Image (spheres, one colour):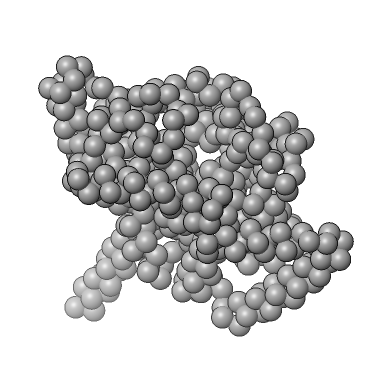
Length: 430
């Protein structure tokens, strides 16, 4: 008998839940840290899971769609090239597993898409509730030292933490864009206050953690969301203007209250926000990212097609000396990481899904789920200028591809049925 597990109002069979738990939810850093707070074990778990998922997708290769097979084939080509280089240059099968893990998101996105299709899952609402609950639980357990001071915090194991008084790293706060958009979409659909209150909660979370990369990504996601909702007739232009007017009024009122109750706090947030447009100022993390980009992009031009691969992993760090030797370059930016390690070939392979999703945004037949996930996924391009996107992000990209595929299949079925009915009427008239 299949046991049914009910979580957040969503029903899973036990087998479905175990698959989603271990291969999807556990890829979210703040959640896996609550389950097992040890970076070494969790990093090993993520790498092993990536390998197992790759083997699984090879096993299910005949069940994949044509475009998925092509993508897996391209991934295998790059992987075989790395194996060849490792065998003949270093005398070992695969010199550094990191060269696999930075590219495995390609397979992981297709895996989540395949699993959702095979199990007929509808996970977006579940994910929105999941992220809110995990955030609250994480802050209850670890958030006692939270403050707006941005003071550094020395830790033995930094795990999913930011290393300062913001507590949670930008990679996990970035995921709060999913419930932010979900509950705003639900509010537009139902006009219920509970959905608006949860949207405001997510907005406040993103605001108070002060990750400028998340602020920029959220702004881009919201702009795309508004454009797509109007384009797909889920929101009228007059209602958009009403929302904007009310938002401006509430914003002005809130700023006035904050300025009165906490003198200087609004100036502090304004200064933080202005750093988005001046990321290279001295003393900021943006300056370090810019310096890192300049150095590694110059190296990339020397090996532009396939990158430095294993040799780049062993290269001494040209910027700092606090990381262990032969531990890689520890990149901030996702684009620079791929260009340096895997070249243009690796960059195109890894980010092609986001390019494809960007083109799908021009469709006028998108569901609310697709609008939300397209907006979130495309904002990942902005986030990649600051950080390497975590593996779970690519799972959300796979979920987006799944919803887009469902819509395409429905459209094909509808057009086929319409053709049959029209053809039958023509025969009847004849």
